[in-house]
Amino acid sequence: MADNVTSLFRGTAAHSPSMAALAREGGDGSGPVDFCIPCNPYFPTPAMFEDMAARLRDIITYYPSSADTITAELCNLLQLPPQAVAMGNGSTELITWIDHLLVRESLAVPVPTFGRWTDQPMETGKRVDMFPLQESGGFALDLAHYAEFIRARGTRVAVICNPNNPDGGFLPKHSLVQFMDAMADLDLIVIDESFLEFADAEAEPSVVQEAMLRPNVVVLRSLGKNFGLHGIRFGYLVANPSLAGRVRSMLPKWNLNSFAEHVVFMLKEHGAEYAQSLHQVRRDRLDMASQLSSLPGLTVYPSQGNFLFVRLPVGAEGTVVRDRMLTEHRILVRECGNKIGSSSRFLRLVVRPQVDVRRLMSGLEQVLYGTRRGAAVPEQATGTGYSSGTAAVDRLVSATNGAGIPGLAAQALDAGAPGLPLAPGTGTPLPAAAALTGGGGLPMPAPATQPPPQPAMAPQPAGLPQPAATPLRLGAPQPAGLPQPGPQSYGNQQSFGNQQPIGTPPSFGGQQPMGAPQSFGGPQQLPTAPAAQAPMPTQPPPLPATAPAAAMTGPTPPGVPARGGLTAAQVRGATAPGQELAPAPATGWPNAQSWPNAAGMGQTG
Image (tube, rainbow, N blue to C red; front, side, top):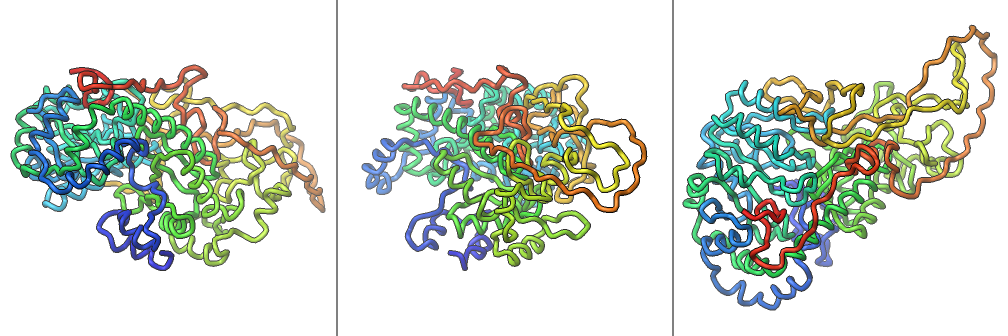
């Protein structure tokens, strides 16, 4: 596979080769550990797979029932009127028919997002107005600015993915309802809720009920992602009966296969297991985010999906990381360089069980930092800063064979890595890029024990109290007095529709944007009084040896900035001790009468 891995990715129409293609290329018939395709790893249960295996002959031999029969059974479980539902052979079939039937001339969509929302309309000659989500704002969607963008462009169809793919950004229900009311004159509003059942920020986050009451709103839902069965290809949309009927009338009579029928009809007996699987994915998401945020220079963005969006350390290039993870560690990750509005600095990593996450962490540490923790491969100094270009990374990998600068790991772990600043609370030196910023965008103060080359100012005495980072709750109003991050310019961020980059403006309806990570760097320097001018010493005094700090063995404590990422408090969504987001209860649904509505949260309609 090592010699053919690049051609595997270039030779597919999708963003990644299929698991079947990877298994064939591997030689032993087994595929890699999949951190690429977002599905539920805990459902179906082993007992359900055994049941399907026992009935495999009948399932693949005979025709399935009509789509109307399968849709009626699904609606019975979700307690939705069948007239308002259309089932498709995967959500992409429904996106195709939405484009053909309901999009006349133009469509607006925030980017980066699911690729079919940009590609499908362009393939049929529609104008696609792409609203760029700003990296400086954590890729949060501000609905007020999105509405202004739509009005300025004269767009007739608006799309919102909630949670968004690939970043997992979440919008509260009341903000979406306000947006739908404000945009009531559009031809169509599509709310893609394909990953919403993995969210726990609200108990009832779906706008399915509101969509059925409006003449121009369609909600798209996925079954393959929720049920961990991408290969079966089934999804559905919910709208008022007129819109749903137009789509349903164009679908083939047998567009759903026998596997889809079998799964839908067995769901009523496995509601409790399904609810427990969602609860476990949410727990795994928190644990995985905490572990990833401990990697130096790696930024983890808050997510309500079953995946995490991460930015690689400066100097790392996504395709190189992807290929090495696959060839050296048999781990498949989603490199996002081919997503409009993203770049190769970003990966999307699917939430998986802890045993797989440990393997992922080990692979990332070796690929990003060398064979030992802390041996990051720095960009060669050029005097012009760092670049994430492929050529620079290829040069470094070629020069060091991917193992880091010789001897740097031993210096970092045994001698404190003289010349490299240590990450707070650890004995690990920061990567070269993070050394200038403390891993969080703010300048790092000079060590108190190291005298400046020209001591025009008196050095700070050791032991001065440093200001503590204040954990902020994701999506909550910020405390008074905190400065808002202003607009920033990023080389990899694209601007579409002649719009200027938007920093972090107030969101629609007066709400703060959900999931915008704040900038927490190292502790800031305190001002000191000017000192008398001292004569220049002929020889600088010897530097005292720096004792290595105790290694951090657990997740980053709340309020302590993770190295290059979020604080643990941000990952957990807490504003103060005891004020965490309460996860949705994992209540079971043992029969059809208590199966949840389309929001997956147990409300009957």
